[in-house]
Length: 353
Image (cartoon, rainbow, N blue to C red):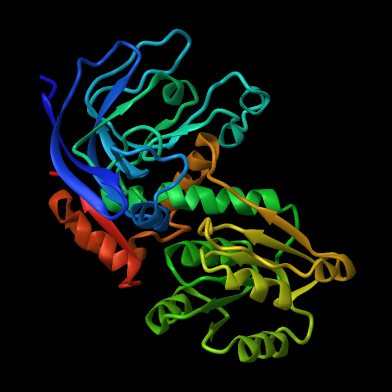
């Protein structure tokens, strides 16, 4: 029997969660209802909670890093059926399936994109209603038994990091990769970078996180308390050639300036993290011009890349468990957001029971 009420943390506006039992409407034949098992708190969730976002219209349930269990099946023509009572991860993408990007399979670039946890209700609730267009792009992905619920919820951010690396189109084996940001996303990028054989430097501001970066395999860590000193250290340690690839994995706009100043010639800078709408960046175009630096960005991923990310976890090539440092119930969601905002530990998980 399907549930009647959905215990939910409803985002009602900046800095306002309301814990409510929302009604669950009858599930239509072209939708799937999932029982949330775990949902991780992303830095994006915290920015939305504090500042709002143009694509988020309260009241709404946030949360897009999801592991769940299927409660029903759906029968769509020419579509693979996922059986009831199966553990899954969920792509947050709800594409239009009609625009030029959707037609070519670039669903994360959809001109009319909706997203679970942003424009439709997400994972900070006991149950999630998954719409048809998500199902049609194979956005519900079964997971293997050797992946626990909590680490499964981090496959979504892993897939976003993997998507960025797949789009770089530059060889990084034995090259210097500089990751600016020592949070969970930076440490995921570190693991992928080492998997690809790069000499990897992690730059951050939290000593405990930099220590974790060392344990994961960073070739060098830089505590960035003084910008000029950090730049000098990086140039010295890279034998005056700078980084071949620089990943900005923090929402701090000062990181972009640092990236430009440690980028070597013919290098690539990737803006991975979203930056507050109130911040204005000043970029010296001569650094790009004379050093032939490519400045690019990366957003989300696709279900195909998400499946590839899951395979990396299944094969134990990427360790997500060590990034989980806090667990909370849904009723404790404010504590999870405070921990995340104050850089306490690494990833906080909301578990549904």
